[in-house]
Length: 127
Image 1: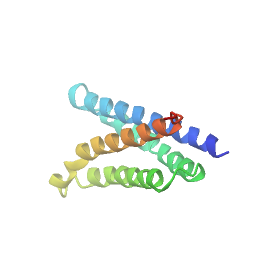
Image 2: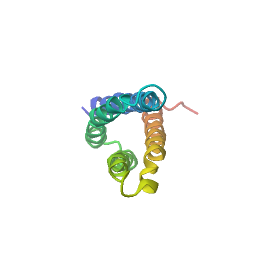
Image 3: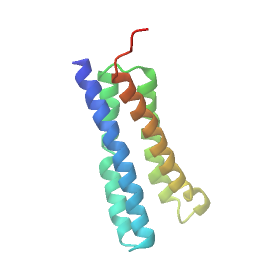
Image 4: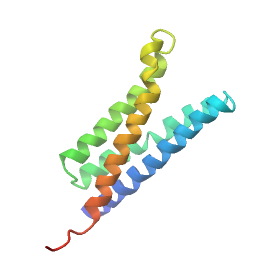
């Protein structure tokens, strides 16, 4: 059963990375094509954020260790900060400007976690 949860974790974190890239593309559409596209960017962000629960639960159930569980929690915190930064756009625009930077940080952390999940599935070669 543990290996099934590890596979779910791997699939979910890999899908999360892909969703992050799509999210950046949707933001670009809002900037360079049509400002109405920011609605798609916002809605998609709230939707794929649900993957973070799957990632965390699978890391715990798959007994993936403190590092993977901690990184899943870090991703959840960074993801929650995205909404906080947007909410501050009127009252504290300088802080709100951290929104895109944090988005790229989320992508970077997700890539690191996905890479670790992929490499942990490979058998260790004999010396």
